Image (cartoon, rainbow, N blue to C red; front, side):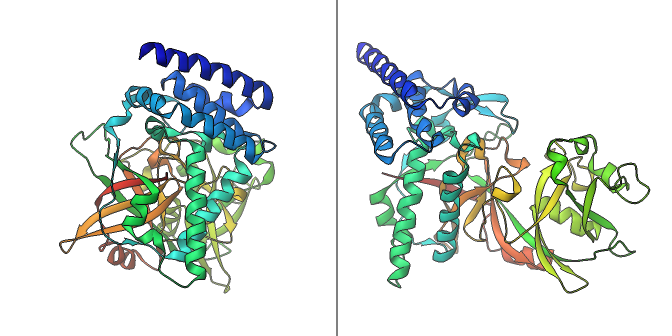
Length: 429
């Protein structure tokens, strides 16, 4: 067996060298390969071949199919090695934090025999927008090319894209025929998808096995164009030249709210004032990432976080004491993941999860299971968003619940949702 594995490794190395010489697409590969250096060499070489395709828009579909085909030849040996190899978990700055064996977190199973719930058109929208992000921005955003911990089950980025493509095709066909989609049928899912159970891994609570399901939302708030006694807490937008001038990384949220950007402040004129809210409005906007503002002059618009001051979110610290501060931009929809504001994925409530995109991966389709009234309930969504609280985080997902006028309305809605759930990844066979 050892001789066979060694032969496979030598052959894989040789083929990888040929592909590397053919496609010459090194820059982004080098950015993320060290992060997965602890995964078996065979697994890495195969993933590099496949990921090269995604980084070079000139590679044809035929070439990519050949690469995937070559990968499948070695899949059983690759999986044998990868499953026992430690996965290096990284933080939001892609710095190594700790190792974990994939078998501790993910295992192949079958989906329970209950109808899967979701809004068909909304799920289709998020699937299409997520796939488009891969198509448009894989070269600018190499983070999305990370296979994450699913690599220990032999799942590659092309597998993820194949899953998105298949689901999009099925939903389009079912919606066009005005019928309940086959993606709600567990038999169809078990026949067409690999189902991989996600067991929570919480270093601070080793007994936690189910994922914690937190909820986030977009809140509507009244705001003013000008500061007054009621609306006295600003949200700001960085000017375009702030990409080069990083002055804003010196200031905490407390510095910003002290008035440094207001008339008479030492940085007045360097940023643009978007709106003035109550302090509650600001904190909810910062926590949720998006806010819908009803201006006193009758204008109404979404505003989404754009760039932050580079200071980490501190888990467990109250919101008003956090040093991280986000600058906003006006947007045309609720926005999820994206490496810059103009590239962010437009998302929908009820079918979107925020999570650890570096260690789990963007575009992973997830079904959560919980018991309510003695019956199992299944809910499907796409990991199309992230946040500072999820990097790293292998034990939690954040579910986009909806748009609400108040915390009371929000709490009433989420009271019907689980606090903990069993989670499954779906990967097209």
